[in-house]
Length: 458
Image (cartoon, rainbow, N blue to C red):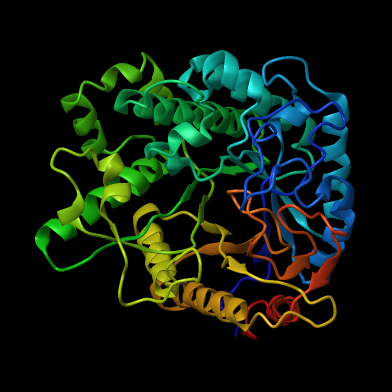
């Protein structure tokens, strides 16, 4: 008997700026990514993998691979060029047809509203999510997308990997262009992002009961480097500040007591305005979505005294000697970490879990003739899917889907086409677009067997 439900979701997950291209077509406005320049190991973002024009071809590959779910992101600046101005009907029509093509292939669309690509106007005018004006603009944009697509799209998430806004990455991903990147600004952005999620989520549940919404984070599994008590302590602190603070808000409508205590001690409570906590208190999630790629070890001895917990990750990261790592980028491969996360979240929050991103990025080249033999990718996904199944079978976790990240090659998060996650090769390099041909790798055919057996045949 298969432990996965018949309606289990198998699929692919991407962002708009890493796939679409067409940066100046169809009435699209500029995002902060559209003005980034190419470098030695990074492309610009103007073409990406050209999915604006080739998405039906990509959907055909997804259907052949047996996928029944696609988490894609709407480009805020494509449907609203300024971010807070008039809506662009041509951009909205693009996504309307895009969604119809998914549905025609039996692929459930799942919308993400924001994946780091702030409309440039909002970044320049308001410094992104540092301003409540941008929170208002985001909620307005989200409501319009619900109005347009809720009759076709059941599953919604707001902000990709929302807990990154509790780290110094908040400034890069929140549309922040100028300032000193202070701790108060970090907490302001983090709270504003939570208010954007909260207001949209509460609105959806009050007005669109046929839809489902959940918060998303990148679950950061931290291990103490040693059994030194301080290593154990800082690893637990990181788990609370970067993971459970958001999960508590998503499911129980409250920030972590420990995080609030830190905010009071450090005079940060002024970022929370009257009525905010009451709005958060109303929040619930229909599911919890997360990405998982690697676990992290933490060494307390390298963290300077007085460092805020939000900065422990960059100060205390250490290589875990007990797990392998990817070549080039050193991401540590830890399938058991995924099982541990699923079990912890299921035990504590007791709502369905949705794996939104999982994958391995490696350097690959196609010789123009032979199939790419990516056995390392097969091994990665096999081991992580098995860990998920173990969490369900032995630990009682409720998991509703497994979405691989970028299973048709896309630009990496840094714009580096050398780092490939896909089971389908896209024939372009960082600075040579070539012909953009799509070529299935060995893992493509392996995944077909996995989905056809609903995860039985690994």
